[in-house]
Length: 340
Ligand SMILES: Cc1ncc(COP(=O)(O)O)c(C=O)c1O
Image (cartoon, rainbow, N blue to C red):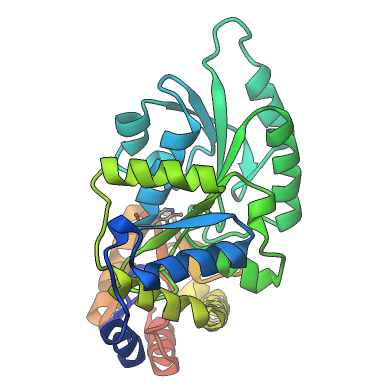
């Protein structure tokens, strides 16, 4: 079966498993797991932060950031389609007791004028706006990259307006590698989290990054929500292996590009396919005219032993990852070419 529902479906390679077996471990709750400590320091230095905290998931990293940056009743500015607002099981209102305010954006890149308007709206009645949260790459638009210069401009605005800037960088390495841009995010945001368990291909784990004091507080929050861990050098070693091999993500971009090109050529063979979207990273979106069309398309793929899924209603997504090889790509392309 070719599984392109998500980049979270990968399996650890033999080499990764060897790293897991040979990892040095200790009790991370006492900060005594050398592999975790090394990973936190290494990652912080790669992205220009003072410190890091190994957490179980992207959701945990995002939500601990909100717990840190907000007080109950605050508003967090984001986009209407953001992961932190829509796909985290209501955790932000459950844990931090905040609400969201949406600003206009293009592919996840906030419109600074609208941000200013939203902040100045309703002088007498508005809640305290404490935080801005962006997503790079931006999932809902198909893995779009927010240019680093725009993050720098946004940070100039947030820092001079007493707002915290959080980056949900679940797939930030895709953005950094594709654009070959600076990676010193630590100078241009207050916190960032990224996932080892997506395209990077580790079985579990995310890194939360910030200042030393932010990370000390985050460690407390992690404990409070049951995220304290013990001999987790075994998973940190897989994460480190994945991170060291991060350049491989660029192969996934090439695979996505190839599929996009084929889909564009064969668009008319797919019933009800309205448009194909590729934003330069590891995803391809197929926007259908009706749900009936998209359901039928997914069914036909499945008959060809290809599993894909929905990003949202009528929008199918293909997510490329390390376990999809060139033979799988050929098979997928052949299947699409055979549709009529
Ligand atoms: C943009 C984005 N942020 C956060 C997350 C949450 O990550 P996790 O599933 O590890 O909690 C995801 C997961 O798909 C994501 O795509």
